[in-house]
Amino acid sequence: MKNTICLLLISFFYFPLMAQNYFTTQYPQVWERASAYTLAVAEAMPEENYGFKPEKDAMTFGGQLLHIVDNISFLTRLISGESKSFYDRSTAGALSKEQILEILKNANAYVGQIIMDISNDNLNAPIEFRNLEMTRENIFYLLRDHQVHHRGQCIIYLRMEGVNAPPYVGW
Image 1 (tube, rainbow, N blue to C red):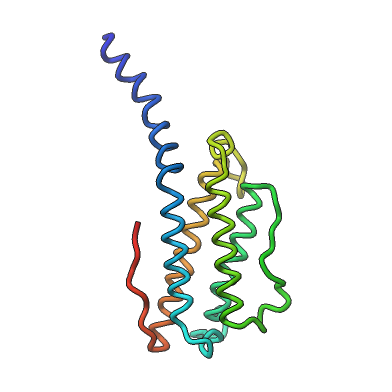
Image 2: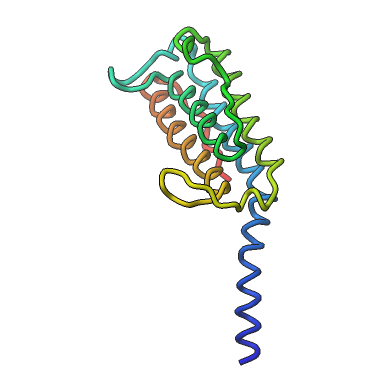
């Protein structure tokens, strides 16, 4: 009986510590690789195709990338409390490929810095998002999932335009 209780107590503390350890030791590199892959996809599309969209109601290729940035602005506010904008949305249609790449780099670097700076207490503090209670750590995963979703759409746009997509980069 003592052994069972001891194992339960160890499990109770061990798994949450391992999850924290994963985030602090592994997630910064996961974010860096994911960001670099998104940038490689963005760089692959020729500038003249940044206005491409597969149908009239779809976002353009450049619009997909700026949407990733807009989501970063929105979700990082839930983590840091700071409202950060990376570009003037009223000029989005006039931005060049190089400007969009720079905006994307800056937004992803901002998330990377927040990842490096966040304390475990702040990371695990409960917040409310869309009527759900979650932690800031959940928001970091949401940031990555959202970027992956739109990067996948960008890869389809590349293929539709006859551009080879960069090889997949995983964990």
